[in-house]
Image (tube, rainbow, N blue to C red):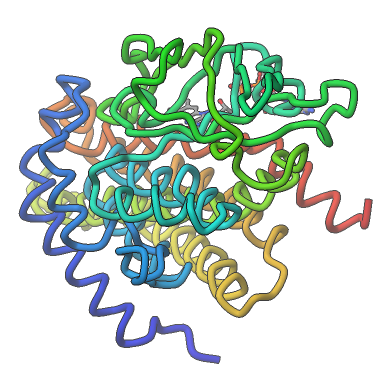
Length: 380
Ligand SMILES: Cc1cc2nc3c(=O)[nH]c(=O)nc-3n(C[C@H](O)[C@H](O)[C@H](O)COP(=O)(O)OP(=O)(O)OC[C@H]3O[C@@H](n4cnc5c(N)ncnc54)[C@H](O)[C@@H]3O)c2cc1C
């Protein structure tokens, strides 16, 4: 059993790491303070292939595998959770849905623009009244000749205002509940499609999160994504892969915080010694490193299974559950190791802690992951 990444993936990791150190680290604290989506970084992300990681080369993407996707998200998160969330959700959700279930015309239209960064992708499942119970959505799409008329509201949508298009899930046959939901692609500028102002959040502050409203939004049947009434079944597959990326995001946030803590502990002196000499600090670092290694093994196992075409739903949920809760613990310890300075915005670890908490909530809360895992284990 080989626990090392293949050479190609290690090279990719080094390239993404160098980019993040040069272009992202000097700005991340300021972007967070301003709660501003950094549009200026988008061309750089596209040039590196980070906006079309899994999109095949024939559609302008980098044509890489799920392991590469996890590596890229982890490396971005090591420096900036918000940027990693952009990369994860753009690739895994909006673009991922078109890639997995789009027809040829849809792939030709949307994937090259997604890979080039001309159009960032958003994905609208959650609503004000339905989150964990996503199939309880109220947004509807009613057929009118060759068109569909969409009405409803979507909540917490990443890239909702800065994206070029949004994949939106709507009830097409409400009486069939989760078997009556269909996905549609709605482009920005379509009459009746509006984004609210940026939502103010605990963390992930420079990621764009908005409420979207759909008021008699008309789209042609050519904008229907996947089979009629199969949108929720397709969504479960999208979420499975998305959970690998959130696990990688959590892992990166934890890794970044631990690296900062180690450097700080060696540098900061109290009682005439570096605080790294105190057993209390050493144990925190040992626990964090151990938990992050466990998270990495779970995350890259799930990615490897996906790449081998094997079932990975349970493993993706386990990775997401463990990595996100471990990241919160690791980032919390990082603040503790930094003492009072860790509690200030001048140091990066408080941002890592705030960002890590999202990983326990987005793309299925920890409680939902436990439900998914226990169903697999119990064969329910
Ligand atoms: C920053 C951010 C970005 C997001 N981006 C997107 C996006 O791009 N697209 C999108 O569609 N959504 C997005 N979301 C939404 C996210 O996926 C939901 O917030 C999440 O699924 C939880 O739903 P909820 O917030 O409605 O919480 P609820 O479902 O109301 O849950 C509240 C609490 O109840 C618990 N709970 C619920 N049901 C059960 C149960 N059966 N058993 C035990 N406990 C239960 C939950 O675990 C949680 O602790 C984003 C959210 C955030 C905060």
